[in-house]
Image 1 (cartoon, helix red, strand yellow):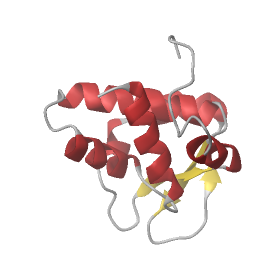
Image 2 (image 1 turned 30 degrees about the vertical axis):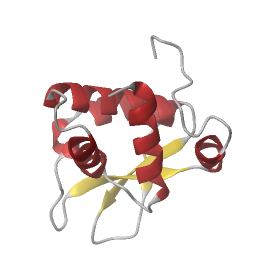
Image 3 (image 1 turned 60 degrees about the horizontal axis):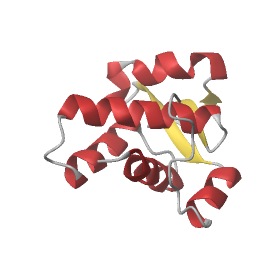
Image 4 (image 1 turned 90 degrees about the horizontal axis):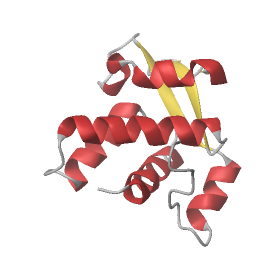
Length: 123
């Protein structure tokens, strides 16, 4: 499991309207069953945070039974993505997160890099 692979999966999931963090994690669990679960979760969080900070995806507060969305402020992204409760499915009325790809993210995913990890090593 590489950062390139995780980045592509996150962007692919974000193409689907209002993806959740748990959906990203389930996809990683399916694609990389032999990877250490904590490593899958940490890599996914790192990629989601980086993509959001760089404007390739948006992260919004949501409830699955309502259509109103409020973007998570940039300064709160890392803390929200680190919160374990958002990596589990939300129930009716629970606050969750909606992940969506931006035009910049789509251009990156469908462009020459095909969604590869392009960030600095420390990001």
